Every structure is written in C-alpha cells, then in structure tokens.
Image 1 (cartoon, rainbow, N blue to C red):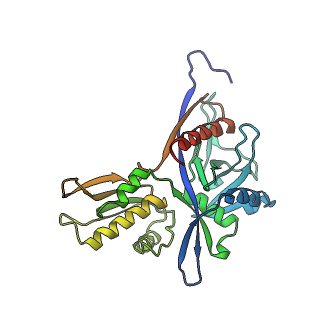
Image 2: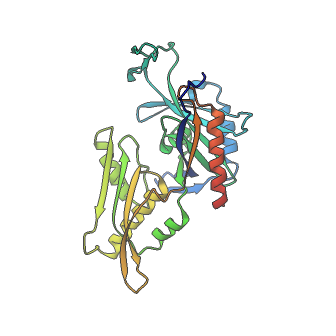
Image 3: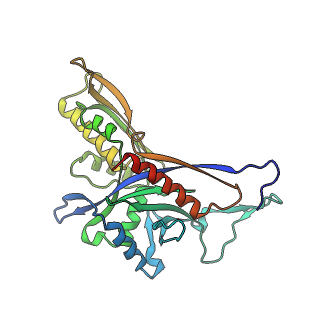
Length: 314
C-alpha cells in the first residue's frame, strides 16, 4: 500500500526490558534455592523447544488463558529468539471493521485459526540475559517464564524459570545501603501468582490475599510505619520486601520510602519508584499505519536496544 498525499508514516514507540534468567529449585522440604543460569542455558533451551515436534505441546495455559510459543531463526537479521503470545479465544468477541464501508462484523477465521499477540524474547550475551519487547499486546515476563516452565516440563523436577529485572546498579545500591524503609506500596496483577519465598514470607500472605480475591484487575498492597518509623526490625522487613519487589519483577508498579544518611550525621526520607530504576531502553521505528510491522523491523529495534544496553552494562 502506498502512502496517500498528505499521509505520514506512523511512529511506533516501544520499550525493551532486560532480565537475568534464573532457575528456582524447590527441594522436598519446600526450601527454595535460586541460581542464575549458565551461559549455554538458552542454546539448550531453544534446541529443546525445537525438538517438541507436536505443536500442541507448545501450548500452555496460564491464569486460564492459552499461550503459544515458537523458536525463530531468521536470516535477516540473524537473531535467534522465541516468540510467545496469547491465543485469543473466539469467545473474546473479536470483530473486524471494513474501512471502505464502515461495516463492523465478527472477525472471520478458519476453524483452527486464532489471533495471537507475539512477544519477542531475545537471549543475548554470556550471562543468560534476555531482551523482551512486544510490538502489540504485551505478554508479561511472569507469563513467559510460566510458559517455559510448563512446556519444558520443569515442574516435575521441582524447577521453574524466573526472569529477574536488570536494575540500575546505582539505584539498587542506594536501596541496599539504606538504613531501612518506612513504607512500601506496589501493584500486582490479580491474575499473576506470586512465587513462594522463604526469605520474605510476608509475600506468601500477599499471595493468599490475591488467591481469595477477584480473579481479574489490580491489587494494591502497601505498608507504612507512620511518623515514628517503627523499629529497626520493621524498617529492615520493609526494606527487604522492597528489594525483593525491585529484583523479582512480581509487581507492575511500586514505590518505597527509604531512610538514608543525610551526609550530616542524621537521616532523611526519600520516596523512590522501584521500576523507574529498572533498566529499560526506549526504541522507535516508522511504519505505515495499515501495513503489518515486519519481524525484521522489530528485531532490528531490539538489536539496537541491546547494543545500547551493552555499552553501559557488562
């Protein structure tokens, strides 16, 4: 389709998020150990996924929805990656609009066809890191991790894949070196389970609240220690919770009220966003509004973001 006179290319702005890949192993007593994957993890994982010849076994349900993934190894650009996305059910009442007549009608699909919304997962480097970007509808990293765990049948051996956000080191150092926190607030998807955590058992209580509440929407959880700031133990607990949220990627949004050294022998309180400190690279590209964005354009944008990331992170 050619641009009509006066029409302009649409500028698409997206965010590329960066994560470390970790594996959680639960022993028979319920104790959880977390370890970063080795440098060959993604090479093995892509090969294992490709070895699953029955495509139906690459469908995994998460929070009642179906997700499907496939390994892609394009020649241009030669970036090996996984595309994972939700399969939209026909019951979602999808419709189509005829731009020439204005007619709105049910979206017509063949009996075995479904609309899917791919998210690109690009492994890179030697530390098990991935770059994740969605051209359209987004699939969250927790869902992607759940898909990998389910499709690779890891749960039978007590293992699960997790993605831990790469956090700005200066911001994380500020949190770790603080004298504690007097408040924290974060938002969770009601559909996303919270992994059990023996280091921060209060998260298990939050998970119980999530499970007993509505199955959709957003949950807002917060604690504040008031003007007196609580005890040292209280401040340490809130700090540990904030650190887990910042590193674990379990929340959509969050903020923490830190107790910091004011440089004059006293302390001060500062409120910081937990996720503005996550390493994110913004990318943009131009396409015609009514022309499908090619995988080549998406992968080139992700590759540029990885190059930017590598310049400032080893």
